Length: 161
Image (cartoon, rainbow, N blue to C red; front, side, top):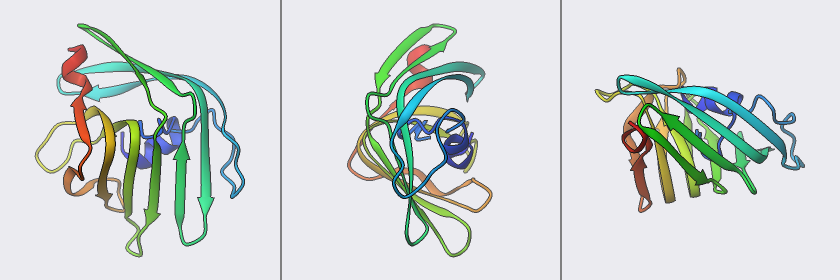
């Protein structure tokens, strides 16, 4: 699942799960976060997990091809074959649309981010805290590495394997 599909599925402020908006209201410049309660599968190396999210989610369209995804009081549980892990993911994801159709994404605070299989690594799910950034091509694949920045990154797939 790419960030683009994530923002259509549940935008886990990050989920990132940065990263996702099936249950959210349509994005507008004055969007107020609305209730969300969703579950969906996420690919991990060799297995799938179920990501469940409850709380509030807002997608805010801004001038200049920018978008903010926010999740006040958003909580997520990831369940895999070896157990589950819960996260409070109240971070902010900022998306800047690029002239070539790609996106530059910055996640700040606490976020769950889905990562597609690309650039020689498998698909995965990561909990980030602090500030991390990445760039996506127009097709949703990564441009460059998975994450840059001073934030911390935890492999959620490994935690629930």
